[in-house]
Image 1 (cartoon, rainbow, N blue to C red):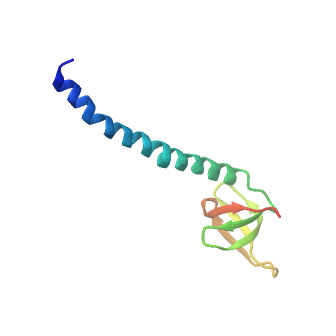
Image 2: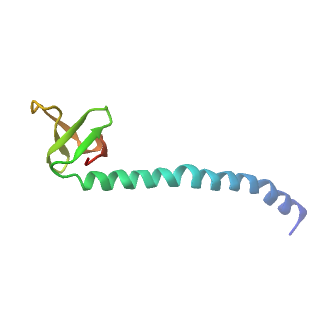
Image 3: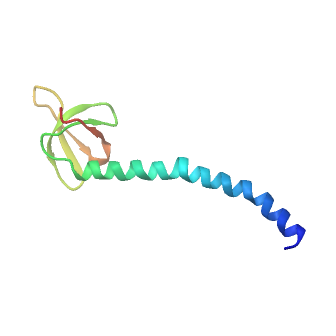
Length: 92
């Protein structure tokens, strides 16, 4: 290898290291969170207590392919959300 090639490789090494760190500390965890969110949405069922991304909490009344209907208070008020609006499930 010529000295110029070695110098080029040495200069590229920090750039490659930065991309590797970014992948393992930013991209990979985001992919994991996305996968967990998709699994949570697939597993929604009647009676689950959920929270939406807007902060509303309720109990799942029905689920279809795209939407979920929640009962949001003790008076039976129903609201319909897209499944992607469900942030978490707490079956306590």
